[in-house]
Image 1 (cartoon, one colour):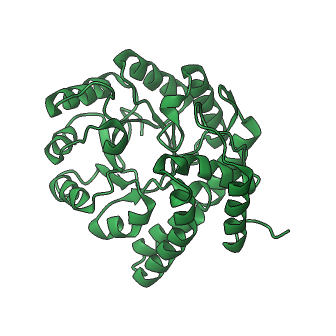
Image 2 (cartoon, helix red, strand yellow):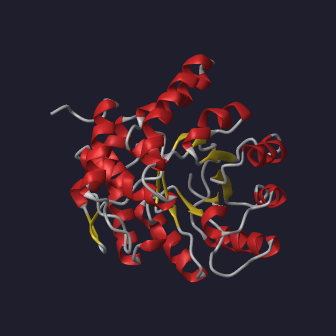
Length: 310
């Protein structure tokens, strides 16, 4: 996936990896190793670092670089590693792109710059300039719920024509929007990868023609979304839907329980801690879930077969 190399399309299940933390600016190194190997053993097709699930924008640049180094060394050439470089400062995005390339990452991923408001001309210029200087391919990341700016369908279509922009991850949760992107881009640029973010939409997105997904729940149960994807490829659609239902059954109480939506990241880390994979510490200023909530999460995981019974 180097800039001068093959333009083979990225496809399959590329989980957004959590960032295990020992403290607000220190990696839980052993936990990171366990999470990475847990994902690889689940058969995933790539790893995405420093996205929303990885709490990327909340982490220091020093810690981000250490994370990229460690994961690239752990993974080697087994699957491509993609690194989120979303930033308000162009120089910092470029710095992370160059560092990621040196560390062995296959590609970078960027959502629109946040804080200031941008129109589509600005947005296309931002992605084109970043792609032009990045030594590895760029994937666009549509995350309007967090950055407040959407890649319009026409902008994605124009971006697909730009050298070194190789794909698109949509976390809008809008299947009609995704279908339009696939219609406009898919036929003209078959090598351009289109992935869906929200895991509850994975099977529906595949049926529309998406090339895979970036499901946060794969940190807990990597094999399930892989099975959804494999069943789809083999035309076993009833099995695909059954695996999707199982994924939803396990994941929904984690994402939607106890209060507002942003707490799903805290609950995900609590679930991973209950499974013995990594620390429960979220990025600052979030705080770990209360003991009673941890018990309820652990009970749900045990009932779902993800936790050894005591």
